Image (cartoon, rainbow, N blue to C red; front, side, top):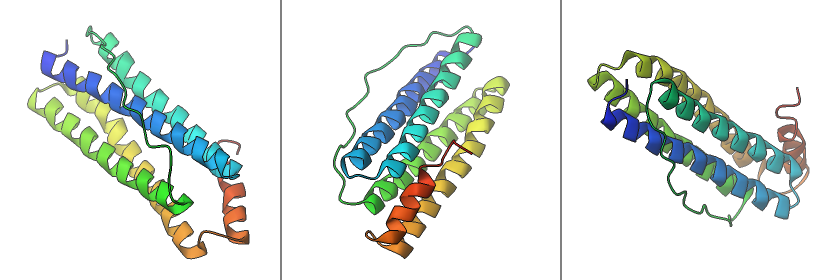
Length: 164
């Protein structure tokens, strides 16, 4: 059984994961409005992935006999200055999530909750991938700039996410 402290922290993380999905959906809408359907698709896939992450926490709480308590989700930003700004925001957000996951792991260790430590290890590994993906796109956008054929080519490449 989960301790109250860990259960509360996991419920908070459900909210954080759902916010991540909401943020990426807002970014997708920004890209749609700016005629970058590949970028928009990439962000929609990312939003769905965050929803799946929230459900992993949800199911873990239920499986451990805990109580899921959903919380209000803040409105994400809707305007960005450029595709690069979107992905810099994405990277910053993923770095924040990494810190949240690490704090959850530290709490699970302090509580001697071994099942939570095992579950959270998956998220620790996932965050390495999340930060790597965002960093690569930021660096690519810095190399190619914000306009022209290279941006269109990157848009098409990002539009293939999940279709391989």
